[in-house]
Length: 290
Image (tube, rainbow, N blue to C red; front, side, top):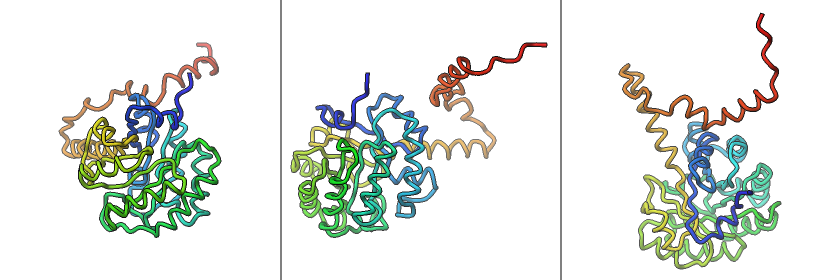
């Protein structure tokens, strides 16, 4: 039985919870945990793959390389944050096509001015609404697969206020976006306003350590949000875990020995049994004993 597409998942009545991954292993774990889709943002990918912050240091080529690693490892739809499209309308379409050809099911494009930064960081600036509208029209009109779901994201709440973010949301939907993401509302009251203003699929991003209140998926869904993205939870936890393990090794205590994944458990996660089956079925038999 075929797994549901991204658009089919969006059309369901229940909240659509999408954990964030940063590499192929974390994406496999998302799928194996029973989630229907996976999200990859620039913040976790450039941090895990390149060891740099999400402040515009990496662009399409470097990020797409990480996406190309992740997609073969999973069978659920992948949603990717495409930043601002890495240039003008031509670059935005080129970026969209790059991801579509890799197999990405949904992209998000934003109105930040390059070099962009994580949506919950201070110091953001945004482009003119007209420039963003042009990019939305371009990616909607030029997508290879008509099923590719396109989210319009505005980061204007921080620098320009909530009213401007709502105005931009209306404009970006008129330009043809399938869904809307108003980044970084600061209170539950603001979430309520955003959720009830638009009758389209909306995304929420309750980021650990960010400015948006952390609510449960059902609570955000009740406020009007469909896609609930927990984009950096895995990255934050594995970073802390690795720091603890390294400190444990450095001190020589080895108090954490045996508290990680078991060797056989890890092999199951990465699909060793499937490859062992292929090897035993088709591989050369061992040489006869002398």
